[in-house]
Length: 354
Image (cartoon, rainbow, N blue to C red):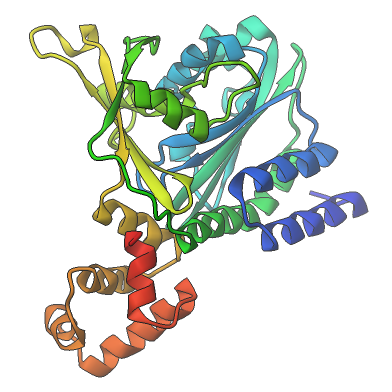
């Protein structure tokens, strides 16, 4: 790709945005504004993902088929072509027209939905590093002859590392706050049909969903994150993706929630059963898992943290990890540096939310 001066300047602005990022929503909004200067698009969907399961959450979307959001999400998860889970950090961008050899009908999503809205091409970008998958972005371009160029794909690939790091740091920053209010015990439930229509919900589900994806004034909250985890259940059942149908998502003030999807009932074939999506406070182990990945801990450092949360002291950790106490202390210093804390007490408070 021959870089223009404008593109180089844009990459610099992206880098500065990523270095100063604090809130994942605000970061994504500003990134979309900057990307649009270089890569024109008519619609977009920008999601965060659970770094371990790669299931999407907290979407920022402006698409012409918003009224068909459940259908869009279901088809997105059931489409194997250019699926974000198959894209790698070394090649994070894929174009629909290029991947299909000019025949987008090879894509289930395009064939069953996007075609109706005259979407000509989709540029898909994954934001992944060694710690996990932190998000993905789909840009749509309208028109029968619309195409994203290889140069535009190269631009998106060049900014992917910076965006990935920023999204990960935004998630890490959520652990710096802790909500002192009493937490709800037990899950709340959203009931969906097999095609992801909402059939019912417990009263508290409405409140959670309103915070997760704030609706427009006067409108009911859209359970987009619940749609994503339910769609992952369909993908898992269909053998399309092996990740479990669950996602951990930050709500507010250090509070993390876990959403899971499962079929209701066993007397009928699974495909005929409704889907229950449960929403509950993430367990200590689930929190620690995200905290470790978001902080960029190595496997050995994450193992060390896992022992510390059980109450083990340095001597006990050394015995469990078959290390000297000096080596354990060295690992702990590295964990402190990566998480920005100076004591075990603060480290555990952030990881566990206590």
